Length: 397
Image (cartoon, rainbow, N blue to C red; front, side, top):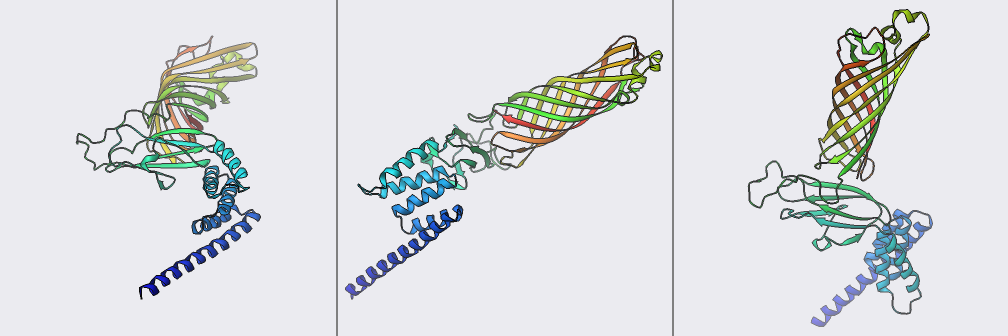
């Protein structure tokens, strides 16, 4: 009886192995047919399934070729390496496979994940949906080019998301830690989490930004002289640079230059009455310089929205040049301090590049006017405001 049972088990195992081999062979030929049609995503899926059922060297080689055609150089590298281990000495395929391994190894991006010192117990990391084993920390692992997402969590902590892109041959070291303590976490424990005061190693420390806007005037140029009588709009270009002082707050300096659109009433306000008998024209520009601070209201990455608010303190100059007949004059209106507030939303378009829109407002008084004889001379100053909408781009370094 025992002999009969043993023979039955052996027969069943042999039948199962023959069935797997047949299924693998069918999937292999389906994958090859799809590759010939250029349908590489579906082909790679078939070849992977075939390899899982019957890990043959030929299937691994074809799978590596399929992954490489999709640009997944790290997956191709692993497939060729697995196939090489299955090739026996003297196999003519060894040379070509080793050349592929060498070429792909040079092309594949490398990512090293490190846990930040002091990361709380129980910290776990997932890259692109898969758990990262603890023995992979500190190791430069080949990854495919393109977008990647790393999620880091721990008990009693919010999950932190890192999103970035890698190109072929890129090498990146990313130091990771979970997010801030959860709202209900007990932070009074001696070994409890400590909020971090600044960016970690590998995270951005500098930011450069540029924007273009349309500004509309409100308030008065001088007492009883509306600013909109002289200036219809300003179209400035602004550049700024600063430091990330924490993961959500940055501060720095800015400057902008804007061309003016003048109003039809500008000459009546700026030129003396005696000059208005001739044709009058007005042109000018707007300058601003100062300091700014910006606070991200939420995280956000990989295409998600990042709302933020900002404040500024600085100096502005409105310079107008008017001429009518033989009369000419230049007016320099200086305003300080100028206070501004902004609100915007950015979207990550690359690992450290952002684009977005913003609205803003500022208030100041032109405390001095530098001009020759003009109807404005001697009038008390008055406050004015600018309202603007802008598009901007920023890059974190």
